[in-house]
Image (tube, rainbow over all chains, first blue to last red):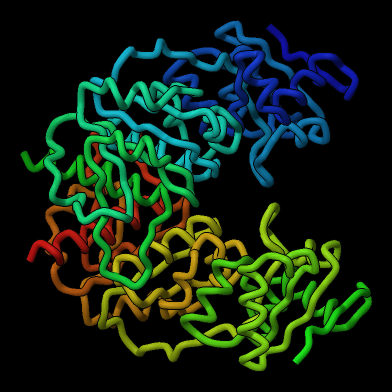
Length: 264
Length: 264
């Protein structure tokens, strides 16, 4: 198999790549995502398999990591296209990165009917860096399922993928999830963080599976959801600043669960 | 006192504001920082005092929160200038924010000669969101001193200030700090996180003050610094993903210290 070159901005396949890079709606409609850079592409190959398409900037072909990945794609019968660097750059979020990306089919796991294992529910989390960090922390802490409400930033967007560092590929991520019925029917405790409660995170028994509920960066968790949670807990503070970034909160919660699990 | 209006892009004071907004070097040279938005300005007024200058977009004057802040500035004899919205927007990082900013004197605390209280050392942390989140977590956990190496993103940049949510105003932040002599002369244990160690964070006694050392997002802590630290610890994982975002790591470490302190 040979590498095909695209040299014109008017090439229909290139125009489709631009649409996928720029537009969350186009990615959702196509059921496709873009993985940007060596780390994500390499992790995908090892953990999931072949991409639909491997796209490489011409000058990146000299990079041994890139040429190794291109070779594995060719051996696996995945299509590879090379672009002049000027055509590659509009596809990428990464400023000084290596010009490699995969187009992959966005995994759509079958949604469970109820919460039965350790999981995360995200209510309108806005910032791609925060969502990526939460996914990465969840994957490191052994939390497998992530439910994102409508109004949460698209999990498979390039910036969230980049911040997630491959966490997406080991998680089950359910987008546009209806959180209220999940909370109402949960078979495990649902724990929401809130600064308006006396209950401390550290007083909870986290040795059995729980579902964590985190909310919007400015507004927190929706009031009705917060009221429906099994527990509302605060992370105790010792300083003058009273709130944490949502991704920092999530990391503290997930790893308190890890600590209690290991201490058993 | 009345509000002065600037209507021309060629006004020398406006040109100086543009330089401060766009250029870390100009801010450093002037010893001034920009606080963007109601939350930071209000927190500064409550915790520190008057700004050097209050800058407001003309249509934001109708906002009661903004007019309240402008009034407090006038009562405190701080200068206030109003700008047409089109002139305000290039000064701000915030896309759909309220058009208010303060120019303030960047606090420069006297650097201690040695580490004697709970503190954070940051070795070339790159991402403004990560640095802001680390500052916010430190302030919430009661860690007061932050030492940033040369090569760490400017702590008083608009994006870091925004992510810090006011944490800057309760911390002592030392920029361009030489970390190696601080680590060598530390009167308290210096704890570096590393994924290449068997020592678990949860096995450490954190009931007395410690200095935390975190590093570059991709490369981690510089090897010589890592070797000089008192302890190298890993955050134990239960999942398939082996690393955490640096701000997530920092939050887990700081709040394990809080947990142990509260448990005493």
